[in-house]
Amino acid sequence: MATVEQQFEWHSGKNRSAGVPDAIEFIDVYKSFGSNKVLQGLNMGLPEGMISMILGPSGTGKSVCIKHIVGLLYPDSGDVVVHGQSVPSLSDAELFEFRRQFGVLFQDGALFGSLNLYDNVAFPLRQHTEKGEEEIAEIVNRRLREVGLGDAGQKMPNELSGGMRKRAGFARALVLDPQIVLFDEPDSGLDPVRTALLCELIKEIHAENGGTYVVITHDIMSARRVAEYIAVLWRGRIVEAGLAQDLFDSENPFVKQFLSGESAGPLGME
Image (tube, rainbow, N blue to C red; front, top):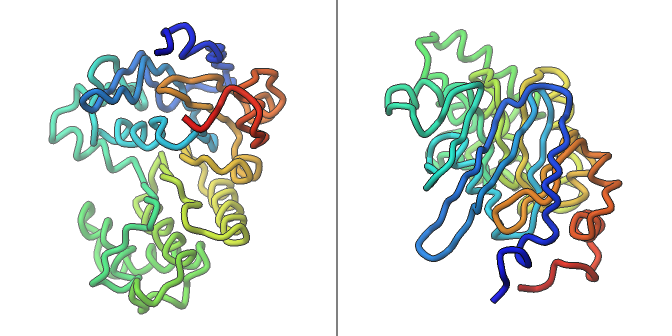
């Protein structure tokens, strides 16, 4: 059984500043599911207005972070702060309003199978705003054009390829003009070419719209293409975090191994 010191021996604690305020902060967050300790004193800041990536091996708590950010999970202890608001302290009514600042792209696009693409993308506008159908049509069609699906509005989800479903989910994530967009393994299930195209799309739309983007992934090529800020998560804590180039130049043995995809290093098959 590894001691605490051995378990976290590669965690340098370096959280290099990006030079801008943090949009999202995890402050000494612990979260367990039964005997499974997922977050173990997580301290992490994700900078305002940048594309951040949370990288790490499978099962190390990346997706659990997203659920804490939007208030689907609460820490056992510690705090999660978004734009100065403590998420665990929000009432149900406050949480409903709070979530309007987010767009979320789930792994599979999470489209409603009984609705065509247009109605899928329009759903958040009809659910959360008082906009009329004419204004909704203008927004939906603009977002569909942005993701290259301008002619696909009448298609059903089962008529779309995996890459098209991802892009449709991205369009839906954008329709409420969110301040923060969260991507939960957006490259999951995509071949390398479509992954590269999705990365380019993320960069283009961020450049056009701004906002804080947070991408959960373990795909290193996606990180090289997209990330401006990287946090490497392992065993429920940050090993190192900082501007992307600083992380790719890191001398930390775990960070070097993970970001280069080498077999030799602290990360094994456990």
